[in-house]
Amino acid sequence: DWTMAAFRQQAVEAIRKQVGDARVICGLSGGVDSSVAAVLIHEAIGEQLTCIFVDHGLLRLNEAEEVVEVFRHHYNIPLVHRNAKDLFLGKLAGVEDPERKRKIIGGTFIDVFEEEAAKIGGADFLAQGTLYPDVIESVSFTGGPSVTIKSHHNVGGLPERMDMQLVEPLRELFKDEVRDLGRELGLPERLVGRHPFPGPGLAIRIPGAVTSEQADILRKADAVYLDAIRKAGLYDAIWQAFAVLLPVKTVGVMGDARSYDYVCALRAVTSTDGMTAESYPFDHEFLAGAATRIINEVRGINRVVYDVTSKPPGTIEWE
Ligand code: XMP
Image (cartoon, rainbow, N blue to C red; front, side, top):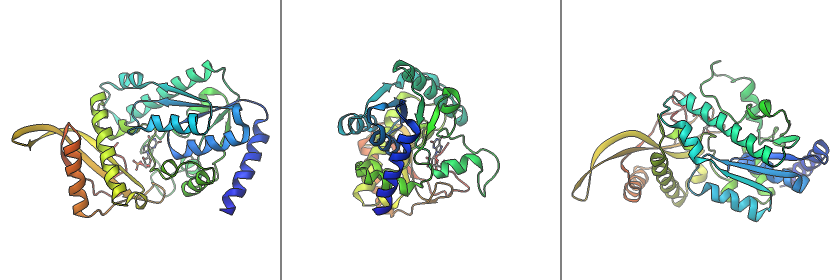
């Protein structure tokens, strides 16, 4: 793509000019935006960049391994991988309120990030994969209510506390352009085309208090659901699809025994920017097949329901 090749070249020059020979750190989340930003910055300044991946233990199945594989082994980008699962789950124990959960995760994320940044001697610049819609949404909520519905933590937070200058090479791009740029940079399609994933991860897909056991069940159910979607050839037609684990147990029958397990809700939406969304109209046959697979393959779930709510009045995530 001619446009993206030109953008890449200009962005590389702009990053070199801004940073000079200073050191840059970049927080990786496993998502498309921070990954593309990191690879672009690495192309511009090589080993002056170190990536820090704070793994809060609430990621999708195999996500942490994939991040380490792509960055450390494929691109050879210096990467600090901090497994902080116990710390995050410990702080979240018993916390039910969605906004408190977000604040705990956001605050703990910054603490751990700062700790790891200090260990490698700090840096003058902090790189972020901020996109144009993030810039807009953090200024005003166009056409929407003037109250905060959910406090997203990918804008703000880190920079204020860390007193570093920002490198944000994706600030003028929309999501589909970032995906094109990622392809231009040779990132694997699986990573580039991946559905958006919220910073607080699975914590906001388990309504109320979160346990490690529930996170493990949800991670498996989500992987089975997404596998069914990929196999049906529907992944790219959907903006976001994921499983939610309801903190509700119901009675079922497995073989000739009674079961008493969690309910799993499936969500899939179409959207262009996440601001409004429609529930994806799956065939009943697809849904019934996915439900059967989840119940057979994931211990701890014996009932599956599908969420048909639009945004508004619903939101995409359940918290
Ligand atoms: P909602 O649930 O508000 O989600 O309709 C809109 C989009 O934002 C994502 N989302 C988040 N992203 N931190 C994030 O980084 C958050 O706390 C958060 N909450 C929701 C959601 O996945 C969807 O893409």
